Amino acid sequence: MRHHRVAVVLALAAAAAVAISLPAAGPVRAGGDPSVAAVMELRKAKDALLPKLAAHAKWCRANKCIRESRDAWLRVVSLDGENAEARKALGHEKKNGRWYIPAVPKMTDTPPEFVEQAETRRKAIIDEYVAKALAVAAEAETPVAVREEATDGAVAADPTNDAARKAHHEALVNGQWVLEETPAAHARHAELVAVFKTKFDATPIPAPAAAAASDTDKEALGPDAVAVDSHFGRVAGTPRNDEVGDVARLQPGLEALFRKAVAEPRSLRRMKVLLFPDHAAGMAGVNRDARFDAGQKAMADALLGMWAPGTLDYYCYGETPAGRREASMRAAAGTWLFWKYQVDAKKGWALEGMNHWLSDIVLGTHKVTYFRPQEYAGNQVISALSDALRADGADWMQLGADLANSEEWPGLRGILAKDVNALGPEGLLASYVFTRYLIESRPTAIEGVLTSVGAIEPPDQWFARHLQSTPEGLDRRVRRWAAEVVATAPAAAPAPQPPVKAPDKPPIAPPGTPPAPPAKPGDKPPVAPPVAPPAPGK
Image (cartoon, rainbow, N blue to C red; front, side, top):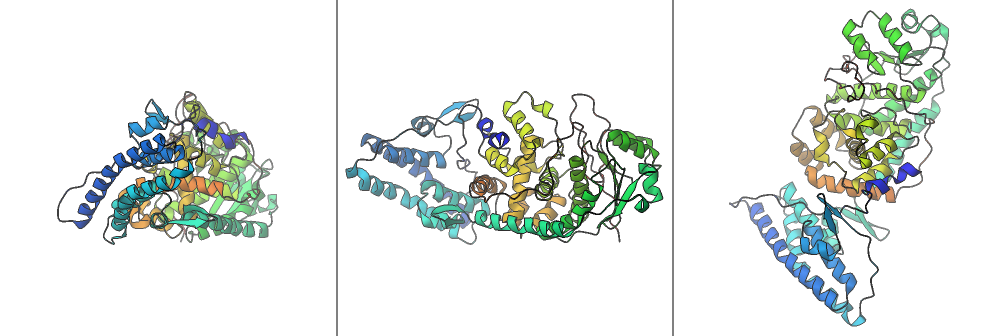
C-alpha cells in the first residue's frame, strides 16, 4: 500500500538518509577510577585510529581498491559522524544541518594483486583499537555508558569481527548479524497474537436485548436502549449501535492479552460502557446524567468519550463504530495502567505506546490519536506521516522502521517527558515502536519500566537498571531493531475487525482524564490534565 512506503517522503524527499554514527564522546574526569582510565585510553585509541583509516582509504583509492576505500571512509563516518574529510570522500552533502547521502555508486572490482594486501593493511590498522574496546567492555565494573561506547565502537570499526558482534549482543542468523532481540520478537509477537485470538475466537458475540438494559441504561441512552452483560460488567447502546456485541466480545481477549504481555490486570467487573451513535446523542446522554456538573459537561462536549465522575461508567460517543470499539478498549487498558503503575496522560509515550500496541493486535486500527493533521500542513514529512498513521490498514511497524531510518526520528529521550498532546505524529509512532520493542523483545523488563515511569524516576536510572543501557544507546538499538523486524517479518495475519474511516472530531481523552474546554478552530487537540481514573474496585 502507498502509506507503507511513506519512507519515500521520510527519506526527506531528496535522497537524504541517516547514518547512525556514534555520538560525540561525553566528558570524563581523571582520577583513581579504573573505568575512567580505561575509557580515556579507548578514546585515545580511537583518535589515533581515525587518521590511519583515512590514510588507508587514500592508499586503497590510489591502488584502484575502490570498494575497500569506500569501506574505510564508512568506518570513519561510523566512528565520527561529523568527519568532514570522510563525508566529502563519500559524496555526502550537508544542508540545513542534515547530511544528504547519495546512492551507492557503481564500483570496479579490486585488482587481484591488491586484495590480500588491502585486507592485511585494514586488520593491522583496526585490530589494536578493537582489542582495547572489547577489553573495556568485558570489565564487570565498566559503567553502562562506557560499555556501550566500547561495543558500539568495536562494531563500527570492524563489522566483520565476530567477537565484537557478540559483545554487542548480536546473533548470526542465516548468515546475517542481527540484534539478539530481533529473532525473539517474532516468536513473542506470534505468541501474543495467539493469546488474544484464541480467547477472541472462543468468545461468541452476545446478542444485545432491550430486556437486558437497566433503568439507568435507559436514562442515559433512551427508552429503547439495548444491553448485554460482558466480561467487565455491561455494554449498553442504542439500536443504532451495531457494535454493542463486538465491544463485549473483545473484553476477555483484551484482558488475556494484557495479562500475558504486561501483568495481571485489576478487575474491571464494575465497568459499564455506554455506546452512542454520534456526538450529539452522546452529549444528550451526558446532559441527562446528574453526576456531571456544568463544567464537566462542557469538557465532555470537546471530546468523544468520558467517564461519569467517580464511576466506571464510560460514555463513548465517537463518530464511527471502529472509533468507538477502539475507545472502549483504550478505556480499559488505560485504567489498568493507571491503577497498577500510575501511568497517565502525562507519561505520554507509555500510555499511547501501549494503547496503540494493543490496538494493533486487538483491532488492527489506529483511530484515536492526539494530533490534528492540519497542524503539520507546513511540514511535508510529518504531514505525510500524519496521514499514513490514520490510513485504513496502516502498518505501524513498517512506518516506524521508515521513521527510524530518517532524520525525523525524535529519539527516545525526546519522547520520555512529553504528555499525550505533545508527542505529535513522529513522537507517537516512536512511542509505539519503543513499547513494542519492550513487550516483544524485553518482556522481563516491561513491568519494571512501567513502575519506574509511573514513579517519575529519572530515565537514566531506570534505563540502566531495567534495560542495562542509556537512553541514547538503546535508541540506536531500537532504530536498528525496527528495521530488522520489518525485514524479517513473516506474513501478517488479518485483523479480526475491519477498518473504518477515522472520525474528524478530536479524540477521546485517556480513561478517567477530564479534557480541556472545547478547542477553537485551529487550536491544538484538547489537553488531558493529570486527573486520576475512577478508584479501583475492591
